[in-house]
Structure formats: structure tokens, C-alpha cells
Image (tube, rainbow, N blue to C red; front, side, top):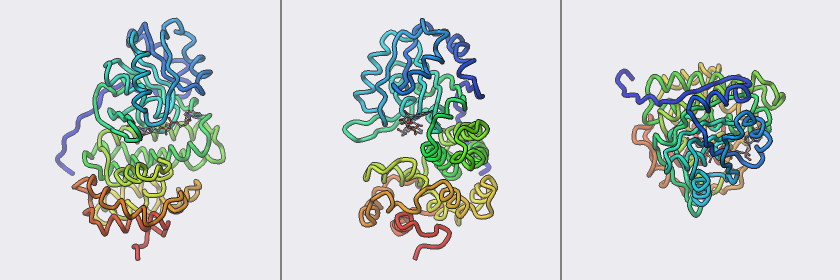
Length: 356
Ligand code: NAD
């Protein structure tokens, strides 16, 4: 790609072990905040009490009713809690960041985000809200956090299984960034570096979850993954997972981890340069086999059938996927092609071999 446009996203990032403990007050001061709405789920109470101790008098409201996928009623409650605030401080995973974004969407309040998982939402301008089980997403610069503090120490408590799932979800952001609609040389470079850090962090995490070097790699990889995704957008893989997740209520991160090698196998023949870069970043001669092996080592089930969904149901969403698939996917998104991906991903067949 030798001609491209690139809208760089603004935002300040502070990264390092311990920065949430040592740097949060400074970041609050930089934004001149005096009346802070703190958003953190109840389970993060002890952590946030410690982090906010030096400016507790400025935390004038707290909201702990965080729920996955930000139901509209949760967004309304959080917005009500923000009535007097001049800053939203969120400490938690993607669901907590998403709640802060819902507040910023209607109030235009600045956000300081302190992520505790590898979701990557904190560096994207994408919001999501759920109404009666239907999730709506949109893009708005008002929801992009003004400041992000990435502190690997805060992720040590994330259980190994959640760490793996969240890390592989970040891997999907990176791989997909190579063919997503708004890709450019910058997002591809960021994605390649993201893959390197995610591989380095994922390998040891199941055995040594408290390994701070691995946690640092994973969080840096997650930041890069979110940054690449924010610029490049969603490609075929994310569209497939979005449809499957919505139709069958499948676990988000595990669905991503299972499906990703099959979408890579589908696109690689028509995106050889992307496949080469993914391969180099993974440190594997075959990127499809490399991704599959990484998933196997980390305990990812071989096929979607392990998640309790039937093959007939899976294949029935073919048209829904085609309806939202990007027009410039490297391999044309035909009905037969989508069915082949779904069939193979359901059965868990070897993704490096063509589907019979
Ligand atoms: P999550 O925020 O729901 O957290 C998962 C669980 O982990 C929760 O029970 C939480 O309390 C717990 N947890 C979080 N951090 C912890 C820690 N350090 N130690 C122990 N437990 C911890 O899940 P998630 O995967 O971070 O986020 C998923 C959500 O984020 C989804 O709704 C997804 O759609 C959204 N998301 C949005 C974007 C975007 O750009 N808008 C990007 C990625 C994900």
C-alpha cells in the first residue's frame, strides 16, 4: 500500500509497572480535575481505594454498577452519577471502560482510564451499548480517553484463563488489522509489534501468572493491539465473531481464539505480504499453524462445537455475515467461502488444510 490516509488519534499514555500507584495524582492534576466520578466494579474497591488515597477528597461520586456490554439502564445510572463531575476516572476491564465511555458520549467529560485487562478499549473511540439484548456500537471522538495509565502490576490478579482469553482477543485485533478496511502502514507496523509482545507474554502466563515481565509484554501488546484496531477497524474475522456471539451468546474471547486461524487461512492466499508479516511476528514459518499451536498450548478448544453450538445453527448465519463483511476483504466473501470457514471452525479441523 503506497497511498493512504491516516487520522492519528490523540491521547496521552503512561506505561510502566507501578505507574498507577505513583502517577495517577499527577495525571488528575494535569487535567485540573476537582470533582471526579470514579467508575470501578465492586470487586475493584480495595484497589481503587489504594490508588485514589492521595486525592480521595476530589472523588465526589463513585459508580460500581458495571455490567458486561453496558446495558442502557447502567449507562443512565452512571450518567446521573456524573451530574457534578469534571472528570471520569475508570479503573477496570473493557466493561468498566465502556461504562465511562457511555458517560462521556453524552456529557463530553474527559476520561482517565486505568485498564486491568487486555481488552484495548481504552485507546479506541468506539462505544457500545446494549438495549434488550441488542448491542449497538458507534464511533465518537468524545469517548476516547484523554489519558491512559497502563500498569502491568494491576493485571497480576487477572486469573490465568481470563488472561489467556483476553490476550488472544488482543491477538485477533492485531492479525485482523492487516486486512481491516482502514489499514495503513502505521497500523500494520503497530499490529506486528503487538503480535510480538503478545506471543512473548502469552507463552509463560498459564504457568507463572505473577510473572511481571510477561504481564508487561501482554499489556504492551494489548495497547498496541487496541491502537491498531482503533485505526484499521473491523474486518471479516470480527464480523464473523460479532454475528456468532450475538446469535448464540458464545463466549467472546474464546470464539475469537477458535475462529482466527480459519479466517487467516481464508485470507492468506490473497494477502501474502500480510501473512509473511504475521508469520515473522509470531516467529513461526507457517502463521496459520503457528496461531493454532499457540491456541492449543493455551487450552483453546479445537472447534466451536466444544462451545455447545450445532453445525446447522452455525452455518445458518452465513448470509448475516456476508451482509456486513467488508467489501475489500483480500479473498472475496462468497457464501461458499463463509460456509467453509464456519464448517471448519465448528469441526475444529486442521486450518492449514483446505476444507473438504
Ligand atoms: P470485563 O471488563 O467484563 O472483565 C471481565 C472480568 O474480569 C470481570 O469480572 C472483571 O471484574 C474481572 N477483572 C477485570 N480486571 C481484573 C483484574 N485485574 N483482576 C481480577 N479480575 C479482573 O472484560 P474485558 O474482556 O476486559 O472487556 C470486554 C468488554 O469490552 C466487552 O463488552 C467488549 O465488547 C468491550 N470491548 C470494547 C472495545 C472498544 O473498542 N469499544 C474493545 C475491546 C473490548
